[in-house]
Amino acid sequence: VKMSKGEQFDNKSQQDDVRRSNIMSAKAIADAVRTSLGPRGMDKMIQTADGEVIITNDGATILRQMSVSHPTAKMMVELSKSQDIEAGDGTTSVVVMAGGLLNSCSGLLNRGIHPNQISDAFQLACKKSTEILQEMGTPVDFNDRESLIKCTTTSLSSKVVSQNSSLLAPLAVDAVMKIADPLDNNADLNMIRVVRKLGGTVDDTELVDGIVFTQKAAKGAGGPTRVQNAKIAVLQFQLSPPKTDIENSVVISDYQQMDRILKEERTYIA
Image 1 (cartoon, rainbow, N blue to C red):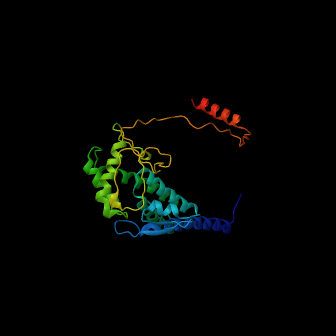
Image 2 (cartoon, rainbow, N blue to C red):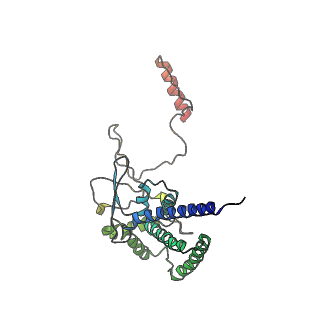
Image 3 (tube, rainbow, N blue to C red):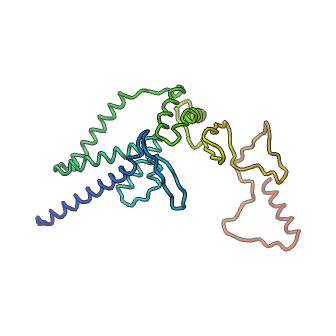
């Protein structure tokens, strides 16, 4: 199949338009969070669909609340999420860096450099950058509490609670060290629960070595509100009577049927 010069020109111009659109979308996402980068970054006030107002300068939180439709913009949002899962910090930096690299690509494309050559050059630069960072990096001992606190304080320097980093940094380090596996130094952060209570300040934050229940004690039934040296049973089965998969109703006409149902429930639970 032969194509005329005009068709070839139109096809090439369409490819350039798609690349330019992708670069502009990624650059727009990077510019949206660029002003919140670093200790002097500004906070963003975001209003969600249900009317909740969020004030934050965390890149992952900002991008999570943004409604984007462009595929490249969605990739930038996923990039920030991946960074948050892997490292827990640097969510804004990776988006700004990716936007800057793509912005540089537009200049290279305008000079007539093929996209495959640009991609290969980025791969070589990535390998070389990894080698340089490995040489510059300083190993951190997981048992060195003071070094971990310094790293945590640095991470909190760009957050809203930076002025309370002297209190929150040791709490975060102690919480992770309590649940960390000493063999591989990995920690399941799902084992740490953050409970928010109204009426106090950040200075009232404390680390509880145990379980904190958000529900209040049921005083109406006359039960105890404080138990010391209690024995806690951990059950792996359901105490309540089983429910059928199909919704149904039971009609009771006399007390004998009620007693029979209660007896069957006690027999099942026992």
